[in-house]
Structure formats: structure tokens, C-alpha cells
Length: 133
Image 1 (cartoon, rainbow, N blue to C red):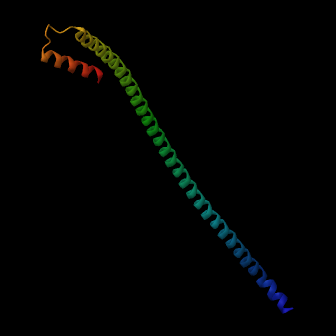
Image 2: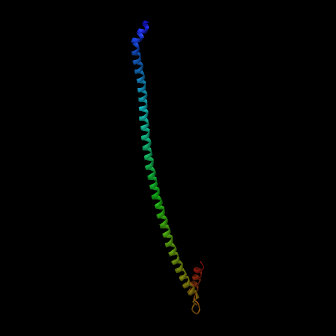
Image 3: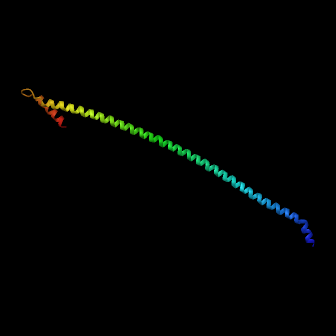
């Protein structure tokens, strides 16, 4: 019976201590959750910044590719224009060469003066050689 009286006297104190311990555990768990939430917020911020950096790098790479493509297109246009100019000049050169060949052929068709001189014969041989080559 003495134990019952003692139990009744200290029971509320034990209940208070147990309640305090339970509150301390709950508080500890909520603090751990708060820490975990802060860590996740930090990870989220890091992931967002990384994503932004990657997006910026991707945009820069796309811009570089566009500049390179434009440069390649410009080089191709210049090469095509150069080819057209080359073809025009080649046609003019072939025409001029044909005209010069016709002149040389007409020169070869001329007859040498009476008693053909050695110089005339050498010039004629040189013309024939040049036309063959």
C-alpha cells in the first residue's frame, strides 16, 4: 500500500517526464525532417542551376553551329560564283585559242616566196610544231 501511495505521488511526474521525452523525440524527428527538406532544397537549387548552365551551353553551341553553317553556305556560294567565272573565262580563252589557231593555219596555207629561203622553212616548221603540240 505504501507503494501505491508513492506511485500516486510520483505517477504524474513520471507521466510528465515521459511526455517530455516523447515531445523531445518528435521535435528531433521534425528537426531531422527540416534538415532533410533544406538539403533537398539545396539539391533542387543545384539541379536548377546546372540545368540553366546546360541550357546556356546548348544555346551557345547552337549559335556556333548556325555561324559555321552560314560560313559554309557563304564559301559554297563564293566557290559556285568562282566556278561560273572560271567557265566564262575558259570559254573566252577557247574561243581566242581557236581564233589564233585559225590565224596560224592561214599562215601555214600561205606559200613561200620563190626559192624558199631557209629562214622561211624554219619558221614554217616551228609553226607546224607548235600547232601539233
